[in-house]
Amino acid sequence: MIKFSELETTKSNEGLIPAVIQDNATLQVLMLGYMNEEAYNKTVAENRVTFFSRTKGRLWTKGETSGNFLNVVSIAKDCDDDTLLIRVNPIGPTCHTGSKTCFATRETEGFLYHLQRVIQGRKQTMPEGSYTTRLFTKGVNKIAQKVGEEAVETVIEAVDQNHEAMLYEAADLMYHYLVLLTATGHSLTDIEEELAKRHK
Image (cartoon, rainbow, N blue to C red; front, side, top):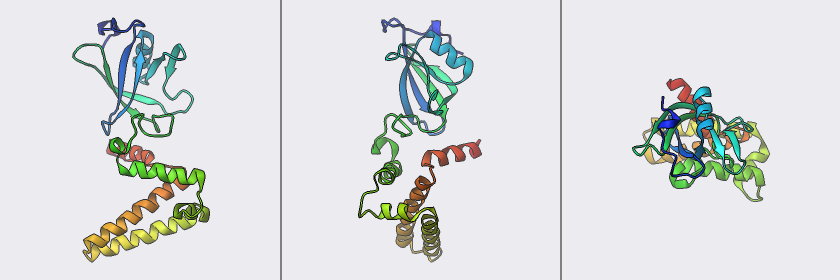
């Protein structure tokens, strides 16, 4: 294990070192934080990421209030010994906005995560005239029924080898599936975590 004394902290007047946090399963960069020696040693001892908060002036364990902890898998230093790369298994979304990553954009997350955020926004605001709003208004049972209908239609087109129609129906299925996840208080991140557990 790397010792903090091996790291180059003279570039920071506060004796801090930046730590890039990366999802161990997807390799997606989740966030950037800073550590002093105490935060680093606590991270190593507990296998849970702890930063030094420059705004709060104290140690801050990621997830201490939200429960969205970052469980450490490995720690590496860069070639200049002045930056850490910490690979983690995240519990829940990393960003305070509810996004999986603090660098969330359509380009970094992919369109499904963008669509999920749109659907979550519809659930919060319930705009009139929105089809998604109508689904949420009808409740989980109706949404689940729609998922079932779209799944059957996707299967039929796949069996008949109607590839273009299958893709169209599969897109409908995915949309309604995201609505169902949102309606039941879940997200794509939850599904990723469940699949990652099975993969192990």
